[in-house]
Image: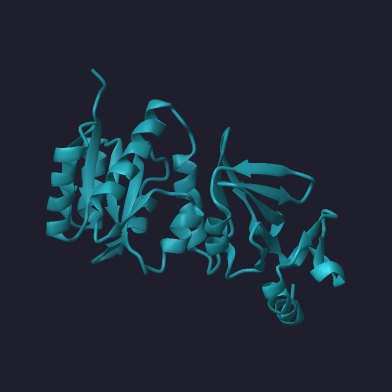
Amino acid sequence: MTRRLKTIIVDDEQDAVGFIDSIIGEYCKSLVVVGKANNVVQGVAEINEKKPDLVFLDVEMPNGTGFDLLAQFPEKDFDVIFITAFNHYAIKAIKFSAVDYILKPININEFIEAVDRVVRKRSEKLTGSNENLRILLENLRSSLPTRLAIPTADGMEYLNPKDIIRIEADRSYSWFYMTGNRKILVSKHLKEFQELLGDRSFFRAHNSHLINLKHVRKFIRKEGGYIEMADNEMIPVSRNRKDLFLAHMAKFKG
């Protein structure tokens, strides 16, 4: 029989703790709840005593955050699933760092999917979760996250957005074209990266192309318009986005 993952729930809302406990009891037979806590101090004590495999961790709590709790464990041998509101300031950093999370109000199907990802990762002994949490804490210290965690066939890659020349859609996958002639295939849709990088120097020039304006060489007006990138590729500009692109470039400081 497969060993069940020892699980701790840390949330300041007692109703939320009870709801998570009931979901686990009914739908997540691979988990067993060994501890509960309502604040950072209690959470740290429970983790030190119970040595869990998985922690459900509320982001915002009185007298400290879930990130304050994580900072108490430089070497983490447990996985974390964050619980947070959709509009929380940290949600972009969480997504940027490819860390598992569940939005409040909790959706049972999303909860089960997050648990399944953790169980599968641990059963396949995939690495990266501790590094992702470290990257998250690093990203939270900056107004703009500086490390983008992306899942690849070999594990995880941690990229500086400045080194991304462009991203090209390939059905439900995305190709990252990097400085240094590197090319990385990622099993995520281009739209996800537009949402993460759209407030930076990235621009959706075409349905299939997200480009980094810092790596634009020139705009060519022929045949509707093309953008020459630093890797010598010519990227088409959608007709309805050409004026917007030129406006972005006009005010872009690099």
